[in-house]
Length: 57
Ligand SMILES: [Zn+2]
Image (cartoon, rainbow, N blue to C red; front, side, top):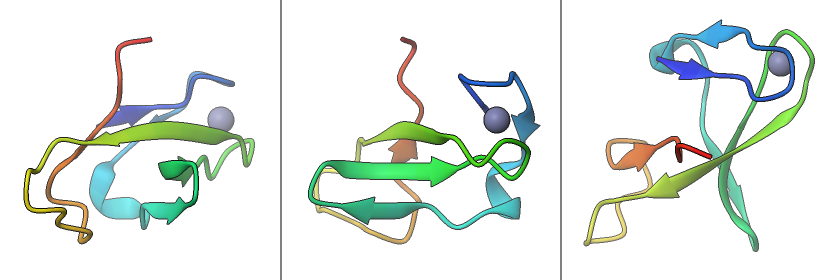
């Protein structure tokens, strides 16, 4: 589960596709369309979302 930092909506991780750009990984909240930053914790650069976590702050 991820939580939107903008509106507080709880988003099941399987419900949305993480995206990435030059600034890194993020997901777009389906509620407010706000961008929420993610961090990639997998050491092999896996881009399928398996290593993505939401930072605490
Ligand atoms: Zn939101």
